[in-house]
Amino acid sequence: MGGVCQSREKAAVTTRTRIQMYPLTTINVNGKDAFEFLQGQLSNDLRRLESEAEILTAWCNPKGRVLWFGTLWTIESGFGLSAPAETAADIVTRLTMFRFRSKVDFETVTEGASVDPQFLIHNGYPYIGKQQSEKFTAHMLNLDLLDAVDFDKGCYTGQEIIARTHYKGATKRRTLRFESDEPVSVGDKVSDGNRDIGEVLNVAGNDLLAVVPVDKADTPLTINGAKLTLLKLPYAIGPESGPPLA
Image 1 (cartoon, helix red, strand yellow):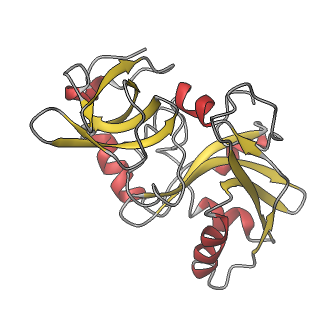
Image 2 (tube, one colour):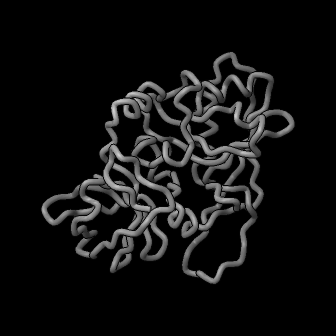
């Protein structure tokens, strides 16, 4: 998979039979205005694809909340992006609303591709399905740390909020990895013993990603009474948010 989230890799046999793979759909964006259209919508700079096979990027709403996160690559007539199968139709419908007079077309292609949620969690890659869409900002999901945001490319949807957060160093909540004593579910609340302070983002067995205040990372946390153990991520959380975890 080459360390890239939500790849076009075909489903593979896995010994973790109780971990359900996430099915993916490819969305092809075709037409002579495909570059300009996506450059004005996505968080990363598409010019990187002149020298890179694929990049990580995100599509946000005007409030900077993430609608989609995944990989983007070039195809003969435009660009392909990898999306959760459960949200692909909604993404195309919404992209179409922003098309206006741009000469672009959208096509969904189901190839039987999937991604292992355990791989995503171990590597700190958020999975943004229907339950997670438009709930978290790019910084809450560590997308700046995953090289999925370009702060010099110019305007795109949600750019003003994302840039303001970045340059003011206002990131207080981040996606962190934990192990739970008991099974938990996406959307469950993380408690510090006094109140709910965070939310479960993704789950694979007892391994999970949760969005929590970084200054609470080393304090005793629970989900529905189940104890959480903080685990390392393969990348460092920025200095504005506390000490590195990797």
